[in-house]
Length: 322
Image 1 (tube, rainbow, N blue to C red):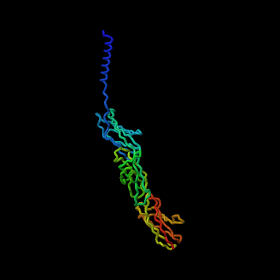
Image 2 (cartoon, rainbow, N blue to C red; image 1 turned 45 degrees about the vertical axis):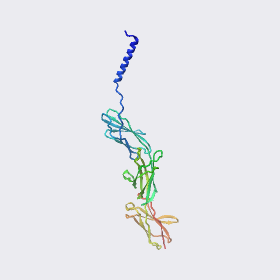
Image 3 (cartoon, one colour; image 1 turned 30 degrees about the vertical axis):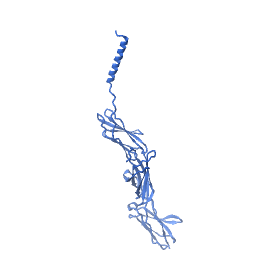
C-alpha cells in the first residue's frame, strides 16, 4: 500500500500535469494586426473634413469594411471595402477632433486603431474700407490663430469673392488670390472694387504640418459706389428757361441701365429731389428742369438703390440764374 504522504505527492503531480495539458490546449493570445496607414484629413470649409487612408492589406483573409469615428460628438461611419475616404460634415473649425480608423475582416477581426488629431483654428476676416468708389482698391485682411490665440505663421489663406445680387451659391464664389500669414498670423490682400461683393476667407490647412480642421469666415461685404459725371447747360441761364442736367454713371451699362437717378436742389441747407429719371443703356442720363427762382443754386444728382452698387452722389455744382 502507498503511504499517505506519497499518495498526496502523486495526486498533486497528476493535477499539475492535467492543468499543463489543459493549458497547452488553449489557443495562444495573438496581437491585433497593425493599423491602417496614410491617414490624412483634408479641410473643405465650411465645416467639412475629408478623411482618407491607404487601402488595408494586413489581414490574411478578405477585408470587409472600415469603421471611422470622429470625437468629440461620436460621429461614426462604416465604410465598405474598396472605399478609402469619407466626409464628415457639420464640424466646428474652431474645435479640435480625433479621427480613428479601424479595419475589419470578414470574420470580425479588427486592426489596431489608427488615430489622427485635427487641431481647431480661429480665422477671421474683414474688408477695409467697407464702402469704396468703383475703380479703387479695398483690402481684405484678418488673422489666423490657434484656439489659444497663438498665431499660425506662414500659412496660406484663400480669398474668394461673389458679386451681388444674391443668392450666393458656392459656384458663384471665385478665387481672388492666396496670401501667406506673417509671424503674427495676419494677412492682407488688395482687391479692386468693381461692384458690390461678398468675400470669404478660407484656410485649407496648408502648408502648416499640424493637421487642422481648416478655417472659414464669410459674409464680408464690400459696398461699391459709382462715380457720376455731372454737367448743367446752359450755365449761366436766364430765369424762366430750362436747364439740361446730364452726365454718366461710370459703370457698365448692363449693371446700371434703368437705374433711378434723382436731380436734387439744395434748399435751406437740405437736399431736395425735384425730378427723377433713369440711366440709359450706355450709362448716360439726361434730365431737363426749369429753375423756380433767379438766385444762384446748388445742384447734384444721386442714384437710387441698386442690387449692384450702393447709392452714389455726384459732386454738387452751382447754377447761375440771371
